[in-house]
Length: 320
Image (cartoon, rainbow, N blue to C red; front, side, top):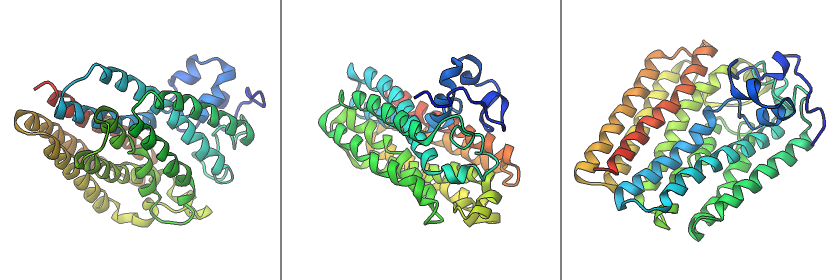
């Protein structure tokens, strides 16, 4: 993988991607030859890794609160963090390969490694497979049920990039893929599933509809020009009402999952986290300006904090 590894994009500083922060660690500290590949994996934009990882940790924390700690849970927390980084990288690489003919036509994405010429599509595919294989080595340390569940996650990951071409609701398919960890976290701890993680999974899909609709408003005008569909384009001026519905479903679903798994003081602590989670989502709605791309990006990134707030409630419940 040596093709054009050090090429610099004409649209960013020394290849920096447009929506990466200027102080991201990749552009500041990573060896220059590795930067295009790390950018392809979105390592310079870590919000998505958090949004993939947090449902895993939430579900694991809820399972622990329901049944108690086990020594292997420490490995599960760590391995899921590594796995989320790798699989988010592989998924984003696949997304950029499939979208390479669109990304060059959108202001925010034309500086990505493939359209800017830093990496070829063939090299990107090799990089995607390498990341997926490393993630698989982690997956096979889990129990057989969790391994099968993890392999099944490849299907929604594979089809998601194509959904924006055929449906106005591609964010639903992103939610299906990005919240798979809400099933995995419970499965690695409990060797199976239960109604609680399934409800948490559905709540996570609603949460994804909330945050990714905000994200998609950054590209609303470009997407209209090139024919890419999204809930941002579908909802338009009614976005606020739809986001309020998705936020409410996310909060009710998370609270219902806690109620199915816990009781007594542990449930009370978890519901406190749910309430704080709901308050943070409401704060986002109050601050939202769908016509300000910078505002949309900031609020999208703020969903890392939303997820961590809910995680803190579930985690604290495990110590009551």
